[in-house]
Image (cartoon, rainbow, N blue to C red; front, side):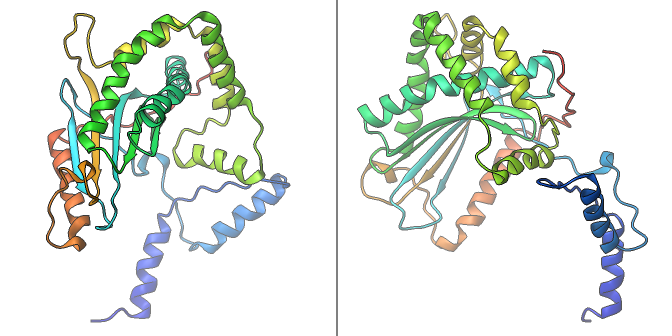
Length: 318
């Protein structure tokens, strides 16, 4: 009943026959060098290799967070039972990025929100209120789905306190955006443009940037340049509008607003509030199974509804 050589060769030939290969040759090389490298790869495959058409490549589907006043909460213990720290991540989904002009504008606005929010978020929650030793926010791009996340790692506050404090910050910061003068807004915009147009520090960094476009399926190697060009048309009003739509927890009438929001609590075992709500697991080795179970629950709660296959346009219209 063991694996024979002939059986192994038969199975591997079947797999390699349908293997799809994407390669990126970058550096002090020319087209001839790249073609020779490609030939080395193809010759290593079986002579019966036919490949796999792009249309049949597996699609990386991203589930939709529910659009609701409440949110899906995932609570899990730290994998290390002795870790005293509790980590909280609040994630907001905004929509699909098809690389159209509107999508490029949305990417710019998300990056601009990160640029504007990062320092005051850290200053208020980390420096002034000492909620945790790590406080940050960042834009998220997940296989074509746009979003933003806020993170707090703490050893002195409960996970519930940390996630509530993030929403309180988003509520209070709305007035800061509204009162921001044009000069300050332009400084943020120029700062973001400079960051996007910075030269790579190394060939490795540049290769990593290009390779991420390949692995994520967008293939837009001029994305940053297009985003900077789009900044010429971005206004403060547009920024406030998307802030109200995506992040602000309340409507104009003061009622809670529907958002696509997920909250993740990873709760440590330290003394004090940070360990409040830590799920009890008899066998610490079963933490992974518990996390898998929680993910299956999330899939069921959103009825496995995804954003579908995302087709990336060329994004030329700016």
